[in-house]
Structure formats: C-alpha cells, structure tokens
Image: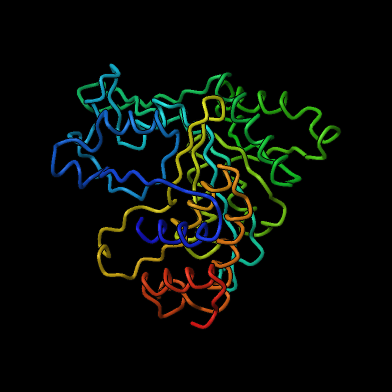
Length: 340
C-alpha cells in the first residue's frame, strides 16, 4: 500500500489534485490483535469517503472464528471482503487483463465483469444427514442480473469496447443461469444498433478452452460470481501473473468504490521487498479514473508499461528489481526522469 500511495502522490505532484489518506488496519493482522478483522469504524469511514484503496488480505481457510459478526447489521460474513461487498452492494467487479512482452499469451486485452453479490458466494451452506451431505445455495436474482448486465454495457460504452460476452451454464442450471442469460438478452437486445456494441453468449466451460486457443475473439465478459472468479484467474495466468491485474468493485447507484489487487496476500514473501506492486498500482489507477482523473491514471499506466518493456521489474516478471526499486523508478518516470 505504501508503494501505491507514493506512486499516486508522484503522479499528482504537479497538479492541483489533493488526496487525504485515512490509514486503517484491516484484515488478518487486525484480527490477530483484536479478535476482529474489521469493525464499525471501517463502515463509518467508507460511508464518509465512498472510496477505499485496500491491499490484499489473508483469509484463513476453514477458520470459522474469522467470520465477521461484530458490525450490528444482523448478519455475519465469511470475510471482511464479503462484508463490504454485501453491506454496500458492490455489485460490479471489474478485472482487466492485459499482456506484456513476457506474457505466455500475447495481445491479451480482456475485461472480466463479475457480478459480486450473489451466486454461490453468499456463503449459505446447510449440513444434512449427520454431516454426510452439504448443500450450498446458488442464488441468482433478476435485480442483480439486470444490474450487472447494465453495468457491463455501460463499461463497454465508456471504454470503447465493442463486444460483450455473457457467460453461463444455462444448459444445466436452466432456471438460475437461464435467468442471468435472459436478463442480458433483454439489456443488450439493441446494443449493436444503438451503441455499436455486439453481444454474444458462451458456456462457462467451453469459454476456458476458447480463451486458450482464440482469446482475440473476446473483449468484455460478463459473468455470475463464480465463473467471473475462475475466468479472471485464468486470464491472470495467460498474461503471466495475477500481480498484473487490478480490481475495482463498484456500486454505481450509491457511488461506492473499492479498489484492490486481484491477487492474495502472499504471507510467505511478506516483508522481503520482492513483491511485484503492479496490481496494487493499477488498482490505484482504476481509482483515479473512477474519480475522473483519467489523464493522471493514463500517465501512471504509461509508466508501468515502460517498466515492463524495459525489465525494471521484480524477479517474478523476469527482472532484478526490488519493490522499492520499482517504486522509485516509477516515481522518477512520473516526474520526467528516465535515467534509472
């Protein structure tokens, strides 16, 4: 996070933009110290600023004590991330994937739009038959499906994208995925004539194969929660690292925005100054663009691409830099100095 803040400050240094940072511990470290991974102070801050730039957090698998049940909402949540998504209905999850010169797959430029509030990720599970059976609820609603279809259409319109593919398994989940699909068909029924945006559909299993052999056929993919999670991770592998992918979670109706890396917390390399910071940087870029500072965001992105092209990157991406090196180099670039 400190690296991303330095980058943003360097990018706005010569402008009249001022950003006030409110630093708040969040996640597993806070849980270890207080017994809770988040608290009502986080909610109050989000409601005041309508904006969060956060780092990745550790979510211990299978640890039910990590459940979030101290927010006085009458509900519990499986993680701090889920709590924020559910409480503030951060339904529109954006994950752009763009390749660079060392990516396993070249010329990838695909954006995953993931419905973020329902599907299998509500955490509703029921144990039956003395533990021999577990049922998990897959919830798809018309409201959420209409909302994410409109979100995908608006994203395509605002970002000069020409194709949106709806991802589904309506051949098996005829009612639930069928509803998701029908909502997209209605929203996109005249998108080509009105906006020049083509619409098509693809099964959630076969799209994985098609992405591997013909990824140029895809532009924006609009998905229920689970499929969007899987597809965006596959795209992360295709471009060489989840550490290159940012994420934004948006509630356009109530104007809430949360921006964070796509990757996890990687506690095994924490504190070693070898973490690739690009996902966090690009998440900050998405935040700046969300705030309307398009040119500032583009300047940072140009600097990131300069570092990637010239191997000023960490070992993970084929370079020899530390996290500090990369941060210093990008700050210099943003101030017009390329003498690294």
